Length: 591
Image 1: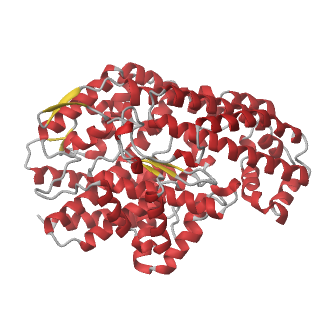
Image 2 (image 1 turned 120 degrees about the vertical axis):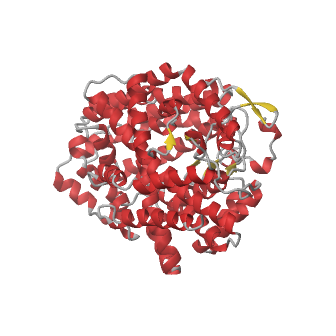
Image 3 (image 1 turned 90 degrees about the vertical axis):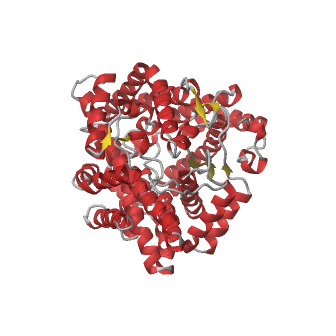
């Protein structure tokens, strides 16, 4: 579908950031001249008032830069082949690199201050808004380099993002997607259409889509392997450069997450894979097949029960499902719909998948590629969860504290999914549809908790391999991935040979050690959603004030503890695992 064929109401309104490219150009030119102004504070940060002035200047520059960058990215993501969007995005990246270079003195200069001065700053009421930022600098001092070393790393920002940009260009533009037969019509396979095909009841269509996609991936597998290996080497280099034992240690420490959470997640999930294997076996039995293929895991196992809604129907359902979060939340959802915060449908060369992007001082934006699958319905709830998290944090916090940690980024989105699912289960009278929803909930766990933990274990293995001098090749990466696929899915499924290439098409692998946060996210979300539904308004109030509005004003671990989720204990994991086991038992009882 071409972009000009989509109803305007279903396109996001990036004019809310800039009314035109010429207005963007004006701000770009002005900011380019202002960036070097931050240097006037270099060498003066030990003085409280110079520090305060520097922080205010820095926040002002960053807000302007964020608007420029977000507008450019949104425009680029509308159409990856559009030269204007690509140019704006590249120039915004370049401007960000210049800003990073100019401002690179701030953190090392602050970290070089004696502890008495830093402690005084942390506890100074006049600097309260910067208290958490300063306390993080104190905590991370040993990993902050000299000013010159920080400047050099800042200069490498664009180069370090090269692998990610190459992957996006391959995945969104250059991947040679085949045409396949779909209901008697030849159609070019896209990422969105692939997901739709895998949910089809037609096993031959599922196979054609699966084989077609992996032929395309396989045709570029050597390039993809070299590109991913480069990304892993970059991760390991930056970890060593900052004095970390490993890239995963750098990642968890950067989020101020207690050490061992990553390994604990993998260990806990690995010890509880029997219910997943049992569910896969149940799927095979329910589908009545001799062989259950990997491409059979996304279709409904319930005959004559499906959820195929128009976008407007899906949005209305999402609003009903999220009603426990209160009237204010419902009004914000409607505003997102009516005021065009969302870009709804897949169009030519549009970025695949879905995301939410907060723009401080404007509002969040949501990219969708809605194609009427059950997954797409829940994606609306998921991405609006991100958007509302950004909205509340931006509304409540100063700019410096508005951006929440990646570690908690998937919690609000998954709370929404769980609440929607619980609403649908509670209000569904048709046994077949109820069975369908139980299956869907189990698949949510399988894909978000178990599959993402499998991805996390793969990332840990690939980075460890590179760190210990083992080459990352098509063969070595694919061999390790296939082993994990067998471990997590069990013996009831046929581990199709092509699935060994799945690692090569996962965008999040280019943001190393991100995917495990989906798993800890659903663990946290199940606990929070349960508390909302059992405790009502007191928990909703706590959730909005202590979680959604907290931004990055304190450690993500502490923020979760504030709403009753302590990931250093067994309790939240036990609750999530019990939820999966209970849901599976309910489905098995409906045989």
